[in-house]
Each structure stands twice: as structure tokens, then as C-alpha cells.
Amino acid sequence: MNADAPLLQMRGITKRFPGVIANEGVDFEVRYGEVHTLLGENGAGKSTLMKILFGLYAPDEGEVLLRGEKVSISSPSDAIAARIGMVHQHFMLVPTQTVAENVALGLKSKRGVLTDLDSVSERIREISEEQGLAVNPSEEVWRLSVGERQRVEIIKALYRDAELLVLDEPTAVLTPQEVEDLFVVLRRMTESGRGLVFISHKLHEVMALSDRITVLRNGKVSGHTVPAESSREDLAQMMVGRAVRLTPERPIVEAGPPRLTIRSLSVTGDRGTTAVDNVDLDVHSGEILGVAGVSGNGQRELAEVIAGLRDPQAGATIDLDGMSLLGVDTRARRDRGLSYVPEERMRDGAIGDFTVSENLILVDHGGDQFSRSGLLNFGAIKEHAAALVERYAVKTPDIDTPTSSLSGGNIQKVIMARELTAEPKLLIASQPTRGVDIGSAEYIHERLMEQREKGTATIVISEDLDEVIGLSDRIAVMFEGRIIDIVDSEDATREAIGLLMAGVTN
Image 1 (tube, rainbow, N blue to C red):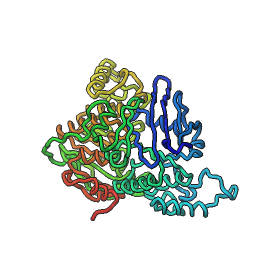
Image 2 (image 1 turned 180 degrees about the vertical axis):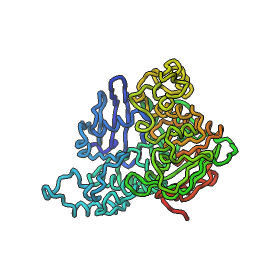
Image 3 (image 1 turned 90 degrees about the vertical axis):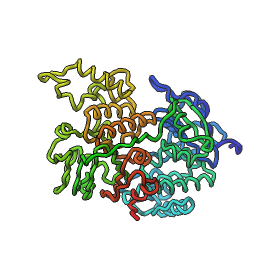
Image 4 (image 1 turned 60 degrees about the horizontal axis):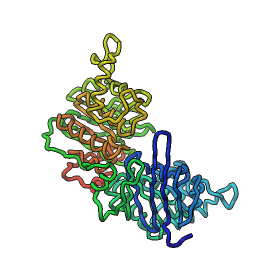
């Protein structure tokens, strides 16, 4: 071990896959006691680089050094033995087991086949006290809040004595207050000498937490910087290669009368409990209503019941321009002016095996424009698809390319193009830029603003507070199925909305 060497050095890392170079000559290092952020768009090579570090991929070229010594990490077990831990974006916990049982999973026990949960629990309490990670070892995971589950994931890594910790989008499902608490914990960890790799697309968080920042673009390092010498706009330009507008222009639009009127709406969720609880809501012509909330507080069920994918409980009314949507199927709702961009792109929004062209007419193929006497008009379909691909800047080899081969941002553009071409009166856009790179997100925001100017009533459901605040005229905050407040955008702050997301109304 070289005491003067960085904790981690990755030198000249190159990783090739058929038809693509995921990493090309990447240099990356982490020092003891620092947070080093790895930043880049989807597909930039961040995940590949970290999978090499964690032993899931072997590099084609380059070397990895830990504490100054060259190492070969060929499996996650090797990584854990080398004191590398990883906290994944999607928690790797068993909900029906206790915190202690989850931490002990995969560990050898002094008692043979029986796990010594008493000693595990005692060590969890010690780690909790040392790092400020308040968690009850005997609590079942399903009873924990999202923030508490995040702490369990970190405790799992620290229990295994991780000195280098990789955090992949660790704030994706946290409220702003939970993020602040997490950052306090992470800072405490660096004070004890640990090195952290922080992966996030939320630029304000990157600026707040990072000691150093490395930016990847198209598999290569496009720059190194520190927060004191950069702005969010600088980082975005390094990621994309051009200037990017992070906050959409929101021109003054005179909102018209309510287009969507909802009264006494309750919805039963997949678990048989009430997911939407007695909601009243109006959305006006020419307005974007943002819906904010931590995942699982009824936002998805609200979108699906309006779109006709889920039935409401008795007593509800849902009217579009004065006409009831209840008892009306999705086809009829579209004919009445409703367009829907779903949360799950590849499950509900597009068919991966279908071509770009086929997905662009997926909902409207039976109309007179594309069909005559039951036969598809392929010439009209091709012309229509080519025009939309150009207008919406969809990056695809051609319109006959299977949609599943496109990037997430371009799949989202295909869905947006199809839904906005219908000239909707009401647009529901659920998580419109989740998993989408900054350049595509900028484009999607511009299209949503165009709809606003056309008089469309738009509902934007997003867990990204910057997105909600930047786009919306008003923001409805959901907590445990209820809308607990609606805030004008002029009065909205991250702190105020974050407290409402946590159920704090005073």
C-alpha cells in the first residue's frame, strides 16, 4: 500500500461492445476523504466504468489501482473484499425481512447456518451512531420510509467495511429534506477518510456535494472541474457539447376556463388500498399543472384513471370540456381530445419490436389518414412518420428501425410526437424526462411550453422538483393519495414543496 497514492485510480480504461465503444481511454481517481462526482448523459459511459470497478465487466484496456497497487477485480465478491461498496439506484432489499436480516444476507456467520442477528444488530447500532444513520435493526424493511431504506443500503456497505463507496443516483426518490439529511451523512463519511463516487444528473446536487467533478461524453472524459470554478450551465455544456437551457422560458399566457374538472375522485391501487383519496382538481386551458410527490403517493394512479387505464371508486366525476369521461374507453377519450404520455415508456407508451413508423401511428392507424377500406395506406404512413422524425429531432437510422434500439430520450420523443400531433385539449405527461439526457429534456420542455401557448390543459407529473417548478403555473402536491396543497409557481420553493411532499402542511 502506497500511503501517498489516491484511494482509487482508473487509468486508460477502454471497454468495447459490438458496434460501440462504451469507455475510451478514461482516467478517473478518487482521493481519501473526498466526494468525486461522475457526471454524464445516459450512454456516456458512467455505468460501464463503475461496473468495471465493481467486477461486473473486465476492461479491454487500462488498469485499476487501489491504494497505489494494481488490482484485478473480476466479481462483486472481489470488489467487496477490496472494500468497495455500491449503493444502487433501485434498492436491493428484501421488504419482508428486518433491517438486520437484510444487512446479514450473504455474510458468513459464526454460528454456521444460523445468522448471529444479535451481533449484527449491535454492529448496525454502532454504525448508525457513528454515521448518523438512525435505523432500527429489528424493523421490517417494508415499514420503512424511502429515506430510511436508503440508510439501510449505506449501512450494508459500511457493515462490510467499505472504504470506497459508489452511490448511483442515490437521491432519485428522496424529498429535498431527505437529500439534505443524506448529504450530512455522506460528508461525515468523508471526514472519516472514506472516498465516495457520486453519480447524479441533478446538477444543483452535484454542485452542493462534490469536491471534484469528472464529466463523460460519448465514452470519453470531456472535462474535470470543481464546483467553485463552474456553474450548472458549464456542467451541462460539458455533458452535451453545446449550450443548454436548463430552465424553460415560460412566457405569459392568459389561462382560460377549466378544461379538466375532477370531483370526489378516489382510486383503488394495485394492493387493494385507496391510492387516490377524495381528490378535487381543475386544470385550465393554457396552464401547466405540476403534480409533485414522492413516488408511490398516488400520482401514477391519478394519471391512469384520467387516461382510462384504471377505474375510479363510485361517486367520482371526471369531465373534459364539460363532457364526462367516465364509462368512456381510451379510444373515445383520445377522440375527445386527451393525449397521454405514460410513466412506463416501453410498457405503456411504445412497442419495442415495432418500428419507429409503426409506433408513430400506433394509436391512430385506423383513421382515414392512414387507412382506406381496412387497408393501411403505407405511403401516407411513411410521409407522416418521416415528417414527425424531422420535426421532433428523433435520432434514428430510419423510420423502419425497431423502437427498442433507440435511446430513452429518442423513444420519449417518438411518444411525444405521436401524442402532440393529435392536437390535444388535455395532455397528461407522466415523468416526461425520467431517464432522458439533458439535451432531450430541454427539447421536451420546449414542446410542453408550445402546447401551453396553444391553450392545451397540461398535467405534468414528475419527481424532479426542478422540472415541476420550472414548467408549472401551479403545483399540486400529493401525499398519501391526497392533494394536500396547490401552490402558485411564483410562491414555490424547493424547501416549501419538499416539506409538503413529506406531509408537513404548517
